Structure formats: structure tokens, C-alpha cells
Length: 274
Image (tube, helix red, strand yellow):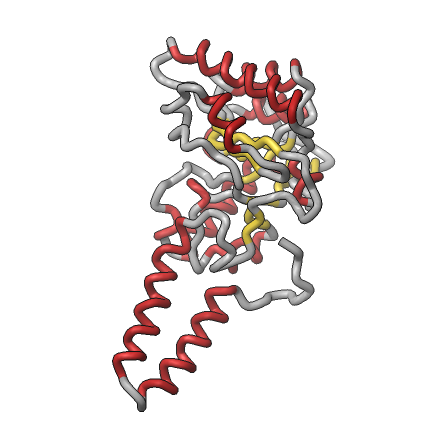
């Protein structure tokens, strides 16, 4: 997770790819089957790597606190939402916890007041794509850049400039490295999640997190209201319990302090609507 001094360092994928090509050429004269095997293994790795959310294969991925950091960071994906964000903010204030909200651009544009509420209450905001398109990482460089840049522009129009990006489901691709470098963003994923499927599976949420959380973890939760609406009260009680238990057993710090990188900065002016 240390930042390299090189302006545009080779990714692990590029290094392994070049090594594979060199060795494939060398062994071809011995037995072409070895060449096919090496190239096949590399392609298989390329196919699997995007779904390994902690694997810095195509680009550097921060998914855990810096070395020596034992505090945890709490993050929420997929908001803001008028049915969940205000309640989460109340619980965060109750337990005196600072969190980071990875927001969807289209939702931020629809609910600018919620973005201001998040910021005004001391939390941070980061880029989580424009519509949370599950196929985003399979699209062209141009489409990928436009999606992330559109969200960036929306948030800057609301007075906040994110420095970090989390792709939908934490999935990366070979084009993401160049896109983020051009926009000026760093990819930050997570090291602890409970596979709640966007708050569709919340049974025992607090206990499941407490059983998995470890020092230095970046916890990923969701800023979405569970369905049907009757489950909202139970979900909030689980979040309340989780925050209480985490405060008792762990040290919780803002994400910026855990990863030792700035998450965002406030712009001098804001066009946010009330």
C-alpha cells in the first residue's frame, strides 16, 4: 500500500504479462505446449483478478489500513438515500463515529442536501461511479472515464472534491488504472464485508461483522434501506448495536487516518441546493 515514487509504475499485470511473453518465447523451441500453458495461466489470472477486491493486479488497490495501523474505518456504499442516510447520520452522531460515504453520482445529484448533511456532520464523501452499473468494468475506456468523471463533476458542484474511488462491487479492470490516473483518483476497496447484498441479507448483521472485523480493517456497509420497509427498524437496530460493540472493542478512526491518504477536500464555494 505504499505509494511508489514512479509517476506511472508498471502494474503487476504488466510485469507478469511481460515475463510470461518472454518465458513463452524461450520455451516454445523446447515444447510449444509449455507456451500454451503459460499463456493460458496468465489469461486465467487476468479473468479472475478483477473479482479479487484486495488484489493489486491491474492497478494499486488500497483495501486495508497502512502498516502498523490497528484502528478500523467504517465506509458506506451506494447512497445517498433519503430513506437511509439521515438515519445513519443520527446513529453515527449518537456513537460519535466518523465514516466515509462512497456515493453514487446520480443519487448525489438527486439529493444534494444529503451530501451537504454528510459533510456538515464531519464525514467524508468519495466517488462510487455514476449509476453503479454492474457492467461498468466491461465497458470502453471512454465510457469508464465518462462515468467516473461525471460523478466527480457532480460532487465538485456540491462543494467537495473526492480523491478516492471505489468501483461497483470492488471490481477493477485493465483500463481503470489509466482512467484514475487521468482524473487524479486512488482506488480504495475494503477488507471486511459480510455479503449483505446491499442490505438484502441483514440477519445478525452486527454479530457477523464483529466475528469478522480485524485490526486495520476497512469495513464496507451499505447506505440503502432494506426491503420491505418493515425491515428498516430491524436494520437500524443492528447498525446501532454494531456501532455500540465496535466502540467498546475497537478503535475507530476516519478512513483518511487509517489509510494515511486524503479522502477529499472541500472546495471554496458550493452550489449545493437546500
